[in-house]
Length: 383
View 1 (tube, rainbow, N blue to C red):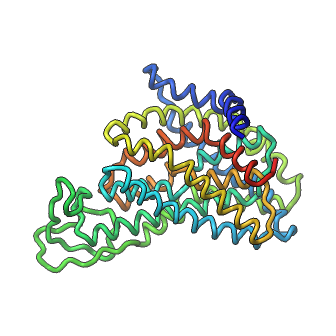
View 2 (cartoon, one colour; view 1 turned 90 degrees about the vertical axis):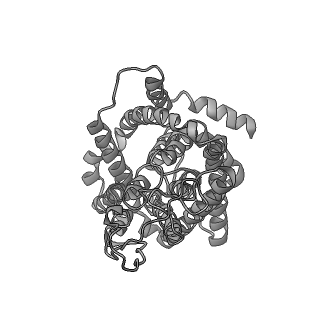
View 3 (cartoon, one colour; view 1 turned 180 degrees about the horizontal axis):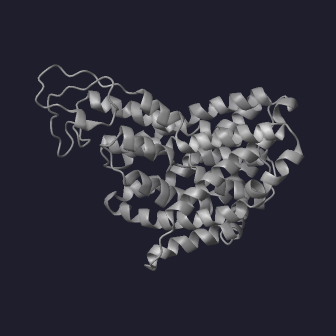
């Protein structure tokens, strides 16, 4: 098995997808005067998310007739619960392994309790190159498993605020803690709006809501989640009308997918390299966490998926196991950062991305995916 893993890693390391990632990674190291156009990155993200949803929707149009829809829904519910559990475990690991403030540990845990669309699309590209099949509903699973991490982080931070967390995110007994001024919080205020503090008002402070309409909208209908679901729905409705309807759109979303993904990984290499610089202040324990967590959570995901398959009698393809491992072992860098900006402004904006992008994403797309493929083969007996 070890020989197969090493062979798979060496084979994967020189695939075009990874070579583009390395190329981007070298740009900041060599101080090349190049900035990836923001509009192009946004365009690639839109096309790739819609492409994942479209292709999944096409395949999903055949699922209802095969009688597997109920099993798929059950697996999605299980995926949601699993990633919530991942977020809780990540918080406990960070508290034990690092000296992060509680608010930063909770925020980083939220990133790991979510998933990564970039890692998912890279894994889809690798599975396609290896001709490994996966279930058509996995793009929907991607959207579903993006939500738990947001909820875990928000609940933890709400608890910290109730314990007297100051405006900079410090709790009592933490360094530089400043007791919060007596202030009035409006129940209808956004969770992050610290400008609503009224130090001249001596009325009793009202308890701040954990969620409000704007925050719920951001969690459930952030751009990434919306584009995924939109692609799935459009692909499903189109697939029901037959191949003649989907053939032309397939040219962009299916046949050109690998080329677009290469450009996307070029940008991700640039960003990942820049984020590594933020690890200098995080400590060695934080670096160990960023490399250990994806392996631990991917194995947890494999155990959950394998148990569900055996208990329910539902057959899963090898690619389904691998993608579920990736969804459990990856960390968000799209949805949760948007929620953090809105709801947890007290937390560090750089540390979570340093771990999720600089460490975990880089590890997963280079050596993680081949390792997960071989472990899934060994455990499930599938090839």
